[in-house]
Image 1: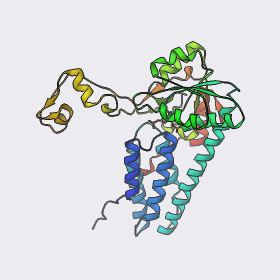
Image 2: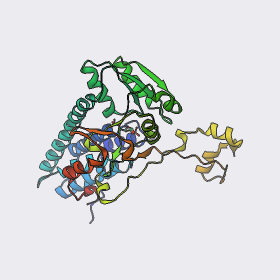
Image 3: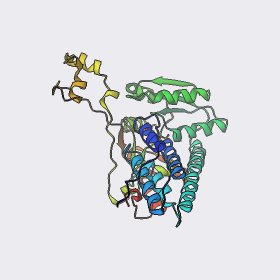
Image 4: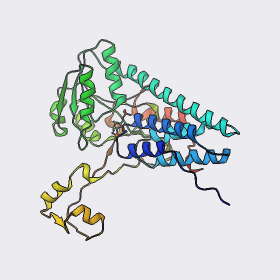
Length: 342
Ligand code: RI2
């Protein structure tokens, strides 16, 4: 008789849903939450054999992996934890997995603090920094500069559609940093007042391209034209190993509701209700195929070519983007597996 397919712990399920729906967001935070969920799954696993334990861990990792495609910190975290699963008994497998996940989470925190210290060296007393979206890696550079006693001010881009710049503004105000909040369209005008553009990354490709929140590439082009240096704060967990062998990074397309509500759509198209339900609902339920002639696209990320980036700041030092591949080879070697598929 075949074993039932392994189930995943409810905590894994809940974490995966929170990541997909962005209650847990930000590349580093996603990686941390994924490692924590794997540790919880390992701790609570009721597997009666080493094979069943391993299969359960792979299923848990797959569930987490399938949530969001762009931030490579997620598969990097899953790979790291699964590679540490070691032993001949369930007890040994369990303890080695938990220890590995804990080590991963500790390293993550230390890497961010170290990166912050390095990034802070680029900021001078009195500098004004323009930010995009919300990145804990980017903010760690500002935090370290403040700890060094430097005065820093920020121009914070709102960052449509989810307005994650508001999270950045909130954090900076907590640290007493003077903040000017602007809509995204005002960025070029305010670049004249900025000494740096400082952003995070969801993935860094082997050629030094930076994949970050939609709008980063346009900001970088404008910054280059204005002579404002672009600094990318990204722990090495953001380095995308598959790009060393020619793979591209998938860009996540998110729900159009983040851009346009059903009511706003109706206002634009002039079509209101179908069968007592909204158009979208009607389409979802297959009640009536309604083509209202309006397409809404919502890519979450874009690609900034290396020529528009001045420095990638990691916990291993700062790098010109074109040289990042050297660090990638050192950290990942040449071959990368997907242990959750084994
Ligand atoms: P940290 C975010 O993506 C932003 O694009 C941000 O720059 C990047 O993750 C890195 O965040 P999302 O999850 O790891 O908000 O630096 O879509 O916190």
